[in-house]
Length: 600
Image (cartoon, rainbow, N blue to C red):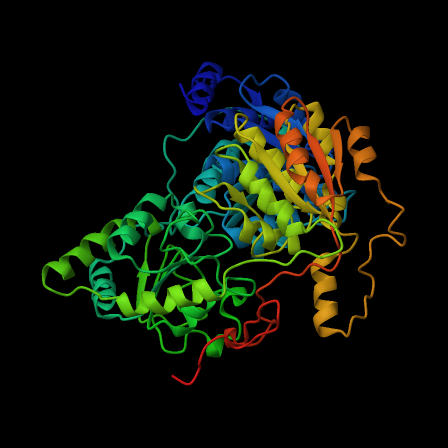
């Protein structure tokens, strides 16, 4: 029996009689049980407090008391990505709710299904600037798929059912449910809706056959095609279908930061990540292509660089479940609205039908070019030469020594890019990061949520010393709730990515990027900090100790582990396309650019 089945059976036993009175708060907990919710991350406060009393009696919904509401939201995101289910977070009104704004925005940008439940002041006080009042519905309107203000307790079961349906269908995303305190306290009856019907909300999942056939025709005609794969393929659970298409056609593949893991990094057709810090082969292939088959990607500026110069000779097939994304940034020659899994299931037979009629693409010459770029400009790094630890080496060894099916989360910055570049991901949903919003502090709470959802798997949070100090209080939550995550702090004493930009573009004027003034004085001492939280604290300062320290961390399974990897401060992320310029200007560590003849 699955956890959902267990939750459903418990909920069935707890369903009150149709005329049995319950409070709105009890109705909310019953609704969560009926929805099969396993875990809620949150913090109580005045307006949401009525919900916490019946939550104490639930035998199927576990509440995890976090240390900051932002941690609750990111934990819900990590849980959602790791499990494929809708994550849930809860907060009180005013500052509790506004502390959820960042993870809600993050989930919106990265299409992560979460439901955020917030308390609101009593309905009679709404609009009076009452204590801890904030119009969280208005605040989050631009960053949610939908949101609700509930003032009638009878509406709670229906709204919860709708919220989970909206969050998890179509293009996934966050839904906010704001419930007034008097609605939680009032008496009502509980009635779970048999089905959810929303006028005007009918996501298109099946693609139009004519458009799929036209895409197949262009694939057969193309000489230099590239499959441009985004996070939509992972959200759709379409990795197997993608691999079938790639294995059949042998078209080169690039996977965006959010699409990593959709195809194993070791697959021979995989060129790596495109964009600002993508591989030379991936960036160049996109620029030189004559056909882009975009699946679940949105032509983000970090991929395209200067949009007007992106893939200038390519026709575009753009498949996405969100019609608003198609032709938003780059006009599609063949627009396909549909779920990535359904699109791929129909695209392969359409390609095979073209081949049966004698129309098969010949990509031999194209692969000769692509392999030349891949061989000439592989990903790599240069040791500092002073005996210090290279951050790239640390992250590379983390990936190599990790147990099978390990989940990696990351913060945002240099360590994020290195984790994307130097760890080989073999399956989807093993790489969890903040892509679109770029939220520092994401890693530790996201790892906590992933571990809550996948307790049998190793979870490593790859963090920077800047990011780690934004949310490391959630280590207390991990210790108390038995979430033995592992944290690799890539400690260069600086806000690394900002320092890199200051080195390259600001004449080495390091304004406010150094995190402490004395290299010999650790503020804070991450090992002592970890121990204060009840974690195991380790430190690694020599290259020859990296493997042994990682092995020691992997062997500890009863508590969280924090490893302070002290690395040199001037390591940079390469390759790099400077912001706002053409991808033609891609540079490697030696500053060589461009890397191909652009006159063709």
